[in-house]
Length: 277
Image (cartoon, rainbow, N blue to C red; front, side):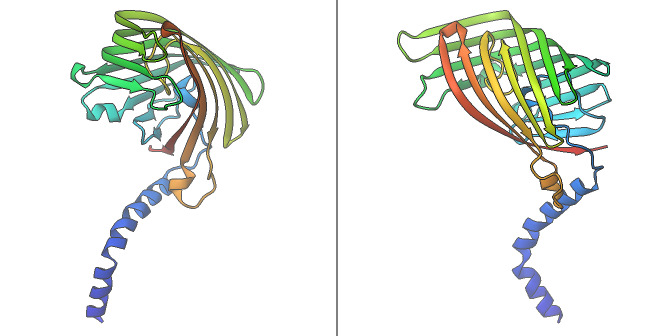
């Protein structure tokens, strides 16, 4: 009997090693308190803060945590792996029945030897190049106002700083480019979101300047965003699915400084929401 058991264990070692982390991960999610999905809107553009102890984790590079009922801290763990500190703090200093106000500060530091380059890789678009280095960040004030039980309006006014950035259009000719040092630029955003249910939120945003989400840290641009926030499996037994969240956005970006429109571009985001403490 012992020999048979030993052979069975050996044969299923790989399966056990694969299944154990999944079961532990799922069990941990199942242990956390069940709360209504927060569905943090795409690109962090509202005055909302996370609940105390609530965590959003995204495999594409960022994690956010509610420190108190008025303070949310976010950090980019992917950049941190490259020794490039990046963080974001939002403080909600007024939470009225209909009106909410917040102040947020974001700061990135890109090491000069790891200059960040973003290029449009799709051949049907004209190529765009973008490089930044040193410190960059913003100071934003955001107001959220409830127009009805399900519809809200949001407005942001702020200022961004870049130690260095270089933006250029490779095509069509003639090439256009702009290079700035220690540059300040204004940021403006306006948006609406409609909460269809506790698991679906629809949104629309118009912005000028710097942003978070798509074409991060590119100032002096115009961007129109339409999107939806989803909690696709709110009642699933598996905690790993029940805590799963999706943001699906469609972006149209126009770079004023180089007279270039990227055109509509879809961008899905995946993350998990759970209560840590």
